[in-house]
Length: 50
Image (tube, rainbow, N blue to C red):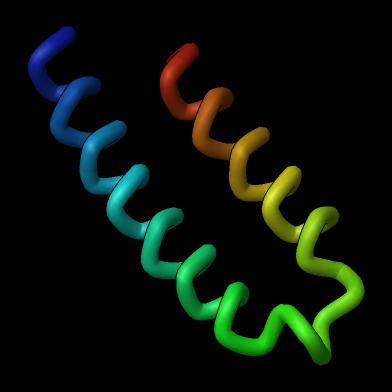
């Protein structure tokens, strides 16, 4: 059970990193960057709690 959670969290972390890297590329045009990152971080920690 714990092992499965670790795999899911690692996959989720990689996904979030890719999304954040994409966001940084058009950070200049995107004023909602902080809000979007907060949203993904919240989902990430929520998934770790499950």
